[in-house]
Image (cartoon, rainbow, N blue to C red; front, side, top):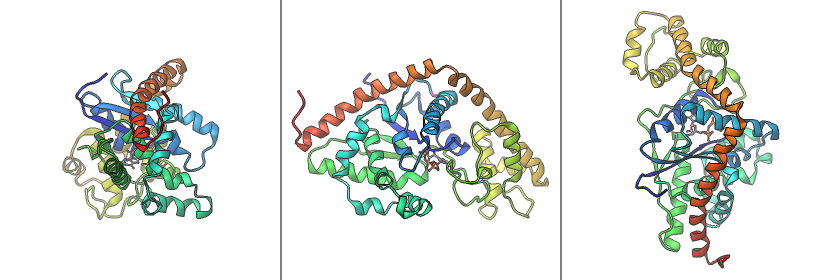
Length: 334
Ligand code: AQP
């Protein structure tokens, strides 16, 4: 369906169980965009295998992530929701774009440097180095105008823009040059144990994150163990990164601003605040968890969603892929 809405592309890797970082930083905002934009939301399983995945876990998580997209409120009638590996144009376009990307550009990426350090240089795959090129293919194949990204992903978006410009200059205008889209309520949620680091689903320490599917008891325990400080004042300041992070979480769930939250807990210690933070998270997640479980028990429905999404995504992206092939000088199939 052609329309004049701006196009958005985004995705989450099924590389671990999703955290409230993924929910508050990405999903909750995606839901707000679905009426205003033409959105493509993808479960990026091809990206997930840039680090080793257990096949049965990957299979299970891919469906779980899809169920979470739906449970969080993404409507498959309004958005194109699909699984990346079902749409072969992504891998094909990534190969082509590889030939317009320099190894120097890729080896400078912070995520590549961080993950290579973490997993050990000897086991770093070419796929991990190539991650940004696949991401460029994802975005450029749909001529996305906007890409909602967290701060951690802005470098990758820059490289997407560089690759697109390079291709456009070499041949003729082919790709829309995408812009980053940082939503107003786009919070960055930090690690509960090391609040100067971002909360990450692949962290080795389960106390560092809250999963979307964590039970109320687990959420209470993790919040009560969250690192704070000895000042005893609920204040939104860089000097108290742990408390600041908890305020950010409350603020992005309740829409109360940090000043209102500070005021509410004036003169109280951290115990009451932490107990309320846990309740707020539990209340937000409980209905989503219930829906996730309902979706997961209806595999036929999930299948119908991802099949329909992949068909539409293939149709749109194949047009752009063919344009790329033609400009490069490949002989058309028919
Ligand atoms: N802590 C966070 N705060 C705000 N937003 C976050 N996102 C992730 N963590 C936070 C946003 O979620 C989207 C999808 O992320 P991804 O799964 O593609 O990869 P990621 O950003 O690398 O997320 P993780 O959890 O840290 O994954 P791993 O550990 O596998 O690398 C993005 O929009 C991201 O900004």
